[in-house]
Amino acid sequence: MKKEYKAIIFDLDGVIVSTDECHYEAWKMLSDEEGIYFDREINERLRGVSRMESLEIILERTEKIYSEEEKQEMAARKNGYYVERVMTIDSNAILPGAVDFIKMAKNNGISVAIGSSSKNTKLILERTGITKLFDAVADGNDVKNSKPAPDVFLKAAEKLGLEPSECMVVEDADAGVEAALNAGMDVLAVGYAKNNRKAKFCMNNLEEAKGEMFNV
Ligand code: G6P
Ligand code: MG
Image 1 (cartoon, protein in one colour):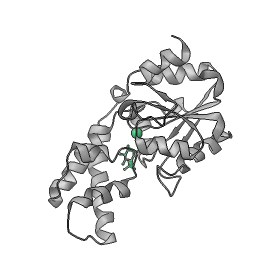
Image 2 (cartoon, protein in one colour):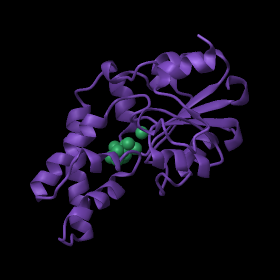
Image 3 (cartoon, rainbow, N blue to C red):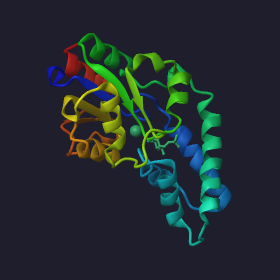
Image 4 (cartoon, rainbow, N blue to C red):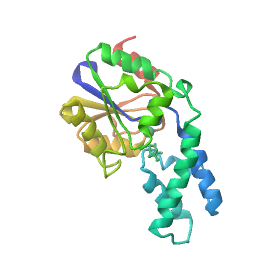
């Protein structure tokens, strides 16, 4: 697959870095405070979904009607709990094979970018020490419509100066796979999305993918 693409655009959470537990704990704290039922199954539906849209999914389990202002406050409160946790992560949060995969792509002349829904992308890249690995970063601060809308991946391609058809996306969320397809990009699905049948390639993680892609 390596010759086909000029760039690889990586989702961040669940592909490069493991922040799942931080998100789960932060949403769980908020839900408990509000007396709203929340579990790991509901948490899976938040993968790749923006903060405000995630909150709407959580609010499906309550009859209570919240004002826009209350929703903003709740999302901010969750983010406070999340950032507190993210501040404690380091390079140990990088997922197996991720850095090798990125370096091999670059050695093969392939550009690498981030396409993430998270508005905390820069903080996470800094905490894990991998900011400099990427040629471009597009995140939740750059776009209005979040995945499954194609916007963040189109933005990443634009920042790289490439056409969507020249890019491959790596995703762990079904919403992200949809977003990439909507952008006209091929997808390598890993992790939680590894059985997504719409993806062109499916692997367990980047450790396995690096062997397939770069013959190591
Ligand atoms: C990623 C995660 C989602 C999260 C979203 C927004 O896509 O997979 O679970 O809701 O980013 O993150 P943020 O850091 O902006 O709240
Ligand atoms: Mg993800």
